[in-house]
Image: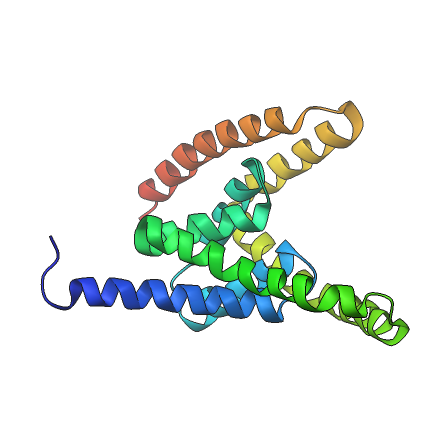
Length: 191
């Protein structure tokens, strides 16, 4: 049982997660990758709660689970920071703004040429935001040089041999375990 300010601090953290993800849901256009870019900016660069590698891991796991990638990432991140209630706060905070916009405004403006043209422009502006998140995550993915080879082999297996994504995840996990054991052992031997 937490005493004193522990419970209050935990609920403040949950409230802050809810508000952050509400902002992400309200001001982020372009889908899941845009929200991941905002998470990178907020939690990796600004607050330093996550590293690039940890965000990449959350995104990888979120993509491999059933459901929407960004919903999974939000739940995993919130759970990591503040347990079940933190995960729930992230998901609910992220979902409320788009649902409100869709139900209240979309039906009123979806036929308006000017609004739809503006949305097309917004979609175009989102590409650089998503690209910056991708670049940051790619840098974090290649901790060691052999990781590039694993990526190239996985890419080739997927494109040319049509290997199922589930097998690629399994192969990547096995290669990661082997590489980690080998490279960390090698680093430990180096004075």
